[in-house]
Amino acid sequence: MKIGLFTEFSYPGKSEHQLYAEVLEQIAVADELGYDFFSITESFGKDLFSCSPFPLGVYVAAAQRARRIRFLTGIVAMPIHHPAMLASQVAAADLLTEGRIMLGLGRGHPWVIGRMNVDAATSAARFEEGIRMLVEIFKGEYIEKFDGQFWQLRDFKLSPPPIQQPHPPIYTAAATTPDSAAFAGKVGQGLVQPGYLGIPFKLVHGLTETYRKNLPTGSRSDVILGIHCHVAASREEAIENGALALSSQADVFLRGRLSRPVETETIRTYATKSASREAFEKLSTVEKAKAAVAAEGANVMAVWGTPDECIEQIKFYVDAMRPEQLMLNIASGSLAQEKVLKSMRLCAEEVLPVLRST
Image 1 (cartoon, rainbow, N blue to C red):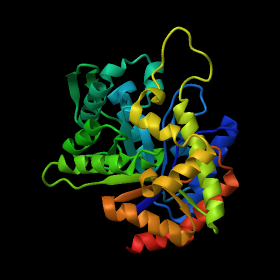
Image 2 (image 1 turned 180 degrees about the vertical axis):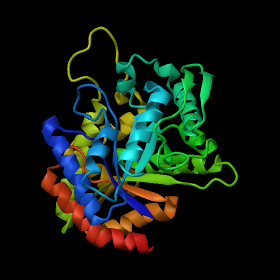
Image 3 (image 1 turned 45 degrees about the vertical axis):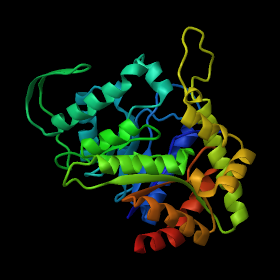
């Protein structure tokens, strides 16, 4: 089983410049420690949720120092990208990282879609058309004319081609929507399950099963399961750090919108979506996060504890959902860099070897 790390690129209490330096250090350390991949989301516009408009650029920079680890875009918002431009950028990044790109795609966070003036009602259709067109472009054949509902293309052949053939592995994100999970299965691609967002275990499990039921005959399942995680020498330390990280992350998601007032339009946020809103509201302060994890246990999908405790908790998810890959959200919210790196190291030394041997 492959095991990687994830950051939403949130930065409460930090500057953008500081965060970029910290993430590049995290990737380099993760490479040294033997993690299999590192994942960064994509976002556009000013808010504390994320300042990551160009994850592929971060990866090209990181690859100059980190020579082995793979790079997942978790996720790129497909509805706002022309497939030919995205395919070209992904292929170039795959070349520059020597074939280490993993392409995670999704419908995108609602306020980001709104900022690009994309009608939310069309995002699902744009998402599905975009992925299908992307796969066609990656075949590398000359396209004289392509007319979709949302995108058109003329006189195009992909250049440069990606190192990975026919293309870097593609993963579709499904947080709460069964249709996204079913589509990922139908097109025979992988699935990213962001359970680290506080989404209830039962819902995450159901989406994974929906994905697998829709896979074409002969296609292999490839689920990347995200879990919020903090490993520490003592349980008390793990709870304090884990609750701070998770609550600050939930808070910026709940408030995910522009950091300044908007008077001319309403931006749809997770605060208007019931499943996500409920998850973030119950985790949005340190005390709420502690109480929720204590009361609901595995349902919250937050793993905090000593190495042995974390191994036991993670094994529950592995046994229940059988993911092909795990994505641990350690660098979350406002957690200080030294605490992030300390947890990464302890997890790599004492947790990963056990998980990989099971």
